[in-house]
Image (cartoon, rainbow, N blue to C red):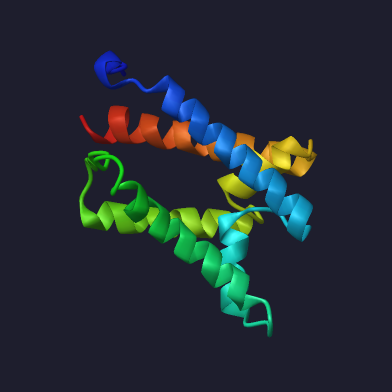
Length: 144
């Protein structure tokens, strides 16, 4: 793996991380809830009365924010080196892992670790180990 130094953007990445941290902290402080995407989306599927408005607004914000940003700057070029079947399978596996792990990377990795949660530490280590193992298997064992 090599770093494309001509397109390396540490300052915008740092700014994005800071904004994510601030948003997570504000969400916990103002709502008393962890900012985990799987929990927010999962709450929509359970249909509790009076609880879906902020969840729908949050998800709409996730969709509208990149569109709004594209008015100010050119969108980043996305490149996926996999077919649709692999992408769908990966998404389903991530969803299953999210259910088994009782949360997603944003919930455990950002919010849980910042609260020093041992469960979130173990979940994040498991997410990372599974990602490393998957990349190793796909790049070195399957792609021969």
